[in-house]
Length: 299
Image (cartoon, rainbow, N blue to C red; front, side, top):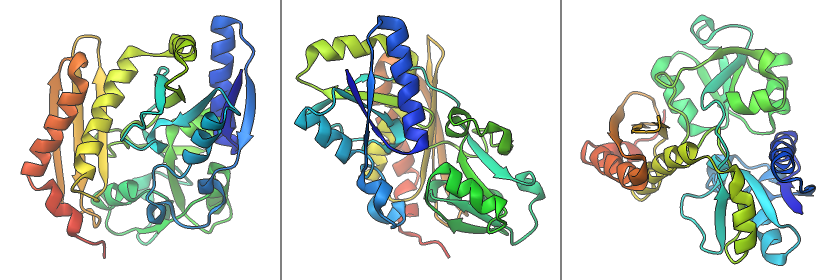
């Protein structure tokens, strides 16, 4: 079976991890097929590219062409609107959802004016909410490239997903992990998605052996918030849900780009109604002015 993956170290490591899990569970050999995506070759900032989807379409093209059987994505790279041609056959058990600081010191100990790099408007807005006195620099490139900017002294710190750093064996360079109360993660952060053609029902069944129901309900609620807010809000969004087996607890926030204002709400409900819980929470946030935050530009 052929598994399509982006060629970056992070993507191939994640894909190999999933391939090994399938082989261990089913005995089937999985071959990795490296694919270059537009998001990997363009030099533009991800926020200018519309963010989601830029790493996904090339993999989906290969699924349609039959060159690969399935693909592994970072869930937060997937557009919230599901393309009916494809099915998320498995959402394996999620890893650490939190954001991590890579630098010489903890966030509170950075000197005023210190340069902190991140490719995410969400992280910039939330970091600004914690400290207005730092210089937040939009950067891109793979994890190695970003960490290299700290090592070389070009930046004082960078913020990356803790799960990704752990997967590529760079967790030793983390100087601080931000708790979700400080930096609410991107919807779906820490989760991987296994996708195949909807028409391949045999494959959907095979792939579903790695599906984790608690992960699926949590990320469904988070992505429902994002989907409902995207309709009227380009401001940074964070969301985190936890399914304890009985109750699904969901918290979401919209932050103005300058970090000075935020609308934050929580709700709880049945894991079986994850989608509705997310949509209802988004509606409550919009009623509280979340959509007003979108028009405000960063200074």
